[in-house]
Image (tube, rainbow, N blue to C red; front, side, top):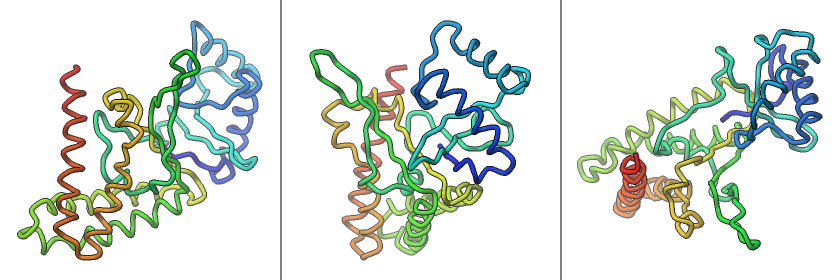
Length: 243
């Protein structure tokens, strides 16, 4: 998900500022993918918002938003011209992982009673400018593995990853570098055990694979890549069996 700084959205800053101002008065909290509407609350919100903005309900454009250092960032949704959200079922594409630093890993939590909390889902947040630099560095390394595939067959996946990284970077170039990119594991975490979730660090795993290739530690890099692929094959398989 891409959260854009309001001031960087051409011609949209005023609308989104008014939207956020009304939303915070209505709900007293930010609009996030984890927000829940009950009964007719959403219809009531839209009717009151439309009246406040002086528009028809059909003209309403929605967003998620976050606040950081007194600045608002919005992730536009339900707009044909907006490509702020990309999604993938049952799997986290490795090119997404390359955009983040493992130190940025965080968790959503669920209260489990008697004061206990459980890890509910994993998420990462990064500045778009920093994410692009990280992706470009990864692409540069991954793009040089073509002549190693005959010796290290798993590197065929790294060669393909280089193409996906270029596509990822092309997507990010459509946004201001001052924005935020947000990765949410979402419902995938329902198929990762609580103990495993605390240690799930595919972002760090991929980083070490790329560093290994960069330093010429090809055998270790291939072994680590095989492990990362096996882990996600297992997760995907568990999700598909549940269906």
